Length: 225
Image (cartoon, rainbow, N blue to C red):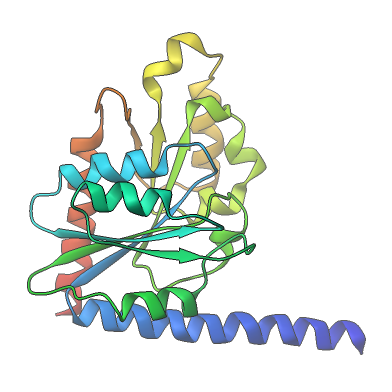
C-alpha cells in the first residue's frame, strides 16, 4: 500500500504540472509567442548561445525567462544587451516547473507581433527533461568540452529534444571529442531533431540555428491559427 500511495502522489504532482504547462502553452500561443525550453548542463554556454541566436532572429521579438538556483548574473547580462529578461531563482530546486514559468510569463508584456520566449532552464541534464513548463519545443545545448558520451549517459534529455546545438566546436582540434560516437548515440535516441554545430566564439552555425527556430515558430503558430 505504501508504494502505491507514493506512485499516486508522484503522478498527481506531474499531472498538476502538466495541466499548468498546457494552460501556459495555450495562452502563449494565443498571444503569438513561441516558447523554447533551453536545457543544458552548467558550463555548456547556454547564455552565450542565447545571445548569439537572438542577434540573428529576423521576424520574431526575443524575450527571456532566466532560471538559476541563485543570482541574476545572466539576466543582468541580457538586460545590458537590450534583451527583455526576467529572473526565476529556484533556491535549490534543480529545474524550473510549470507554475514558476506560468507566473513569470503572465507578467511579461509581449506587445504586438510574433515573439519567441526563450526559457533558460537550470543547468542540469536530468531534471529539466522530466518536467514540461509550457514550451513548444525543447532545445538542448551540449558542448564538445563535455565529452562525446553524453547521449549515452543522459538519454532522456537527448530523446526529448526537438533541436540540439553542439557548442564550442571551434575547440575540437584541441580535444579528444569523438563526433561519430556522439552522433551515433544521439540518433539511436532521436531520429528527427536537427543537430547543429555552433561556436559562441566564432559565430559558426548560429544563422542556421536561428532560422530553424524561427521556422519551427512559424509552423507552430500558423498551425494554431
